[in-house]
Length: 638
Image (cartoon, rainbow, N blue to C red; front, side, top):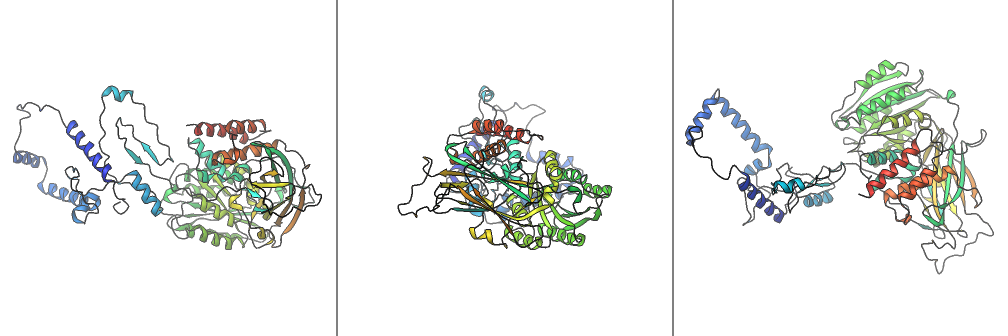
């Protein structure tokens, strides 16, 4: 604590000491001394010491306990260490000093924040008593409103003292980490006509946002990934023909809800759903984080309940193994047929949380176990369940990416399930899932576990297309500007599209993917940039095309990609209920991020658009989204 304590604010320290001295003088005892009587008559020092010693069983016990306490004070407290160490703080001449406070260090919120910014660590506060408040009259205290409870994720809160100088203290900051990426900028077509990105079927961002809103807190802007919000929902897109590619693209145009002078280009990809009865045997390795940070009702206990739901959807010929990791990694359950539910559940129930988080050791052992289970024609998967707090071994996201990338070539993919809040390392979880050719999801309720591990289990574990890339070339004769809404962490270079060695996202059985561009037609008053004086002339002939869509993918297990191409025409079809709802969710995400592209379009408009396009909504996901929008609107107005 001494090493982490920043330099004090001398002025604030002096003021706090002055207030403490005043309160000490005012509040100690009675203003008028009690009159001596036979029961309370003053006694001499030695008489009092003698009576105290008589009360003890032995004088030796008193000596020993006193020595222990004294040593503890000298060794364990900053004040005690200052007696036998050189103090880091010297009292300035003229500063008011209370008895026993010479050399005391004080930490202010501003100092803690300054040090946190310079060191990259969370602020650390000294465990010393706060200065006493100035006491108000009883009637003033009764009239004082109750202080608002501090948010779980807020950085500071204010004590409800009735004082001119309110006392602030820092609440323990979370260590949550999210991938850092600014929203996609507006692009000028004549300068950058081509947009390339990898598909994304992850849903973790939406669940994290929902969890934050249900806790009464707006999510951090960096936690909002719009494409994961849009792709959280199932859509009724047209399915591919039986003898065609494993997925089918659908393109539509609609007027932008937040700007009547621009358009939304809606690109939907719907994957086929193979016959589930014909699926190959499945080998699963549950890699479970049992470190001390998982000791929370929303973490390890919820994890156990979630895996219980999943076991009910496995077949007897499937196999399950369990590897746990904390300070070290260990095999909890050897590969066991899924039909032996009693043995599997007993292994799950026996897990407990404690220790550090050796993510590297856990991953290495999980892949080693998966290798022993793999057979020709079978599917092997590692499912990592964690709060993302990797603090031992291979904890750097870039190093983890390389490790997982090497392992995916063996055919064993990695999916990541996040649990709990406070130290959720979303950045690491995303890096693992993306490089492991798996999916990333966040589970905060048993209902979400049902959605991820039961309803969408087939899509998560059985890919139908690998390394799926999307490239759109816009026609400068018809489109002046464009911006891709979301997919910031999935952006690819233009040349990556034709490079089969560049990894991209996987499309699972029955999965759908949605991408939305906002485009500004040539001649629209919504154009944000001036035409270049010497810009090259747009030469697209007489083509009315808005752009050209290209899709690349690999068949599972193949190394060479296939190509699908289709022109984007202005009359390809108007947007229906599915596209309209996706646009409402895209607006929801942009409002949460505070994007400026929406103008005056706000929560009321987003709620109205989503409400009008909820469709059948058999599982209530869209109805829940509307309620979350209403909640976000209320929290934004505070």
